[in-house]
Length: 621
Image (cartoon, rainbow, N blue to C red):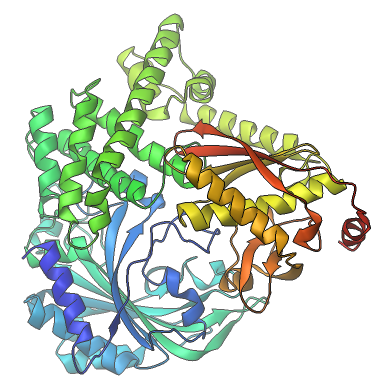
């Protein structure tokens, strides 16, 4: 059974009677209205407002396959089961059904639809704590379904509690969460008892790291919300949030504990094997390198397809890290300087997802161009860094950081070269130098005005408001992948950086400028409301640097705050009261500001109008 067949079976199962779920599309990898996290890492993430009680337009029963990315797993990739990019099969009950329906349904899907051996299924439940009781209800349901008692395990919140932040004490105020029941597939006791297993003398259980068990699904009973005082409060509705890793289910169905041997990865692994002349599975280190390349390049392709481009900040930095880490491991396998190798890894990913996510195949040429450009850029960086290393008699942690800061030289490459020269670099020295660099950067920014403003004068305030109009217009003309990457505003002009892969055409620039001036001509009101971050995101506010603000944020709306609005963003201010105060806006220049980043310069025509209303609005802030 292939990954595409498993996905189709799952979605059909939950759409059919009596389950009657509505199919919703996968959200993009980059959350549009949630700047508190870089990527959608689970299917529930785009559904937070509805899990908290807001009615979903499609109803109370939903299902989909969500594209997901977990950057925290980058260092874990290389074994038989960890991935950065993956698909999460999901079904949700928004205050409708609960445990007695969910657990039998998912058990039926696994055993009847996928044909998994029921004898090889183990489950876990929440053992309880001082606030939430042990999940005896789930235990009773599993037993009724035929799961033997010795296949049911109870764990504390570290294993059987789910929220985006982790255990209850780590949850942020307003964050939903709850106990869960995980499902594991048993690949055989011999993996635990193998003579080379470090766990052979310990008691085996589903969360043992011996490789015997693979988690294939998790039903989260999301019924609590964290309060500001640290306690948990019952949500107004009890929700079900199921997530099943498609690639892991693929491994279980095909009885292989290595997800990289399934059709989810087989095509790209074949190309890597042919290019490197290495046999997958023959040598442990070579196999690990091939897994890292396959995973990272698959993730890079899917990121670029969703509008992410290599850069030194946020999502772009993660993408750049994936590409460069892939190249380092390709170098270990004997491939370097052949950027055609990088290009060849796009097609198998695009073909894998041609039915589920056709936009990847449609963008194949663009994705290849981005990857080859980044590979070439990194190649030049490596050559420069290598020349510097040759000049050094020894390389310590501090020098390793200088190589990183000056040439973007990754730690892994510096370490590899130093080892080949008979040296060992102190990683702690490198980390210490890196932390000092971060501290200096923070100190240098103290006293700077919010939003990149040179001052809070009337003219600068006007241009700041115009930047919001420009941002909204860019998204209307070019697409919602547009996101702010930086800005700098003086009394004379604005400079706005944003994510976009290509030069903007003259026609597009004219339309963007027209939209800004149309909003100015309408003399729209600019209003501000203070709210907490969760509330601001639920309201539809955009925000790209929210981490620099506190728990309470200012949300500025251009247009009707209770109806149709032109722009809504989280921002520190200041702004004019009405757009009519701005005057005519002109785009002066559009240019590249880095890989996947464009830059626009613009200005407002000077006027002799009375600025009393602007001054008054400033004094009230």
